[in-house]
Amino acid sequence: MRNIHVKKIKNAVRELCLEANFNLRKDILAALKKALRQEKNKRSKRILIMLVENAVIAKKERRAICQDTGAVSVYISMGQGVRVTGGDFEKAIQEGVREAYRSGHLRKSIVASPIKRKNTGTNTPAVIHTEIVKGEKIKITVLPKGFGSENKSSIKMMKPTDSEKEIISFVTETAKVAGADACPPYIIGVGLGGTFDKAAWLSKMALTIRIDRKNPRPHLRKLEEKILKKMNTLNIGPMGLGGKMTCLGINALEYPTHIAGLPVAVNISCHATRSASKIL
Image: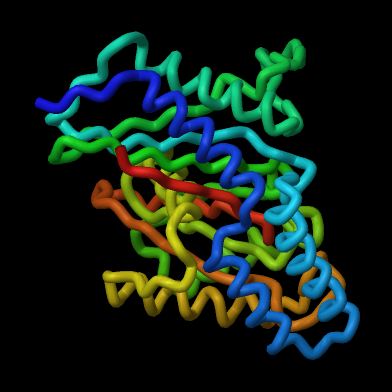
């Protein structure tokens, strides 16, 4: 049994929130630069140049990549051989988020009630997902996600007889409806299977995976490739100004499901998709 003090958890969450908001992931920055080389539309090329410059300035000056510094999702993979000591585990996570948003001068966007709409003033509470895994370590991943793109996400309880073509159509139609509102070029997470809630969880978790990785499941890799190809025929382009580069990457995750079901969730994310991870 390995002991980990809650202070380490709080500090890790704080560091990760700042890192994610200030430093665009290397895989996404590389994808933007690649898109710039491939884009033919002149207006869209200028947009891509600005997006790359924005990321460089944000990192250098430690400023937020985007003014919407998001609702924070925290994904915890907790080793079953770990014992958390020194205080409350969840409170430590929330305090880490509070400290980051205060010290980093990041916009605080969370309201305590979706009906009453009063801002908490701290960008908490974060949404925490915890899974128990083997080992004596804790992996912490934060995903601060803006709602310009979150609002355009969708889920559909498809029929088990629906074809791959119909799945691709649903994903691309979701992006088409999002249009310029979700700040393309997009990163898109697709969750397949499980239950209504599991599919949504998978689609968002997929956004934390590098977009330059090859899916270890060949059938999902082929599905990602087909969706990406279809996406980049929509002519939405960077910031909706037209062009080839509507989507930078697709990540799909799946989970076993009921014989009568085929839940499919699509989590749309913008060009400033932000996440960071650390293992304690």
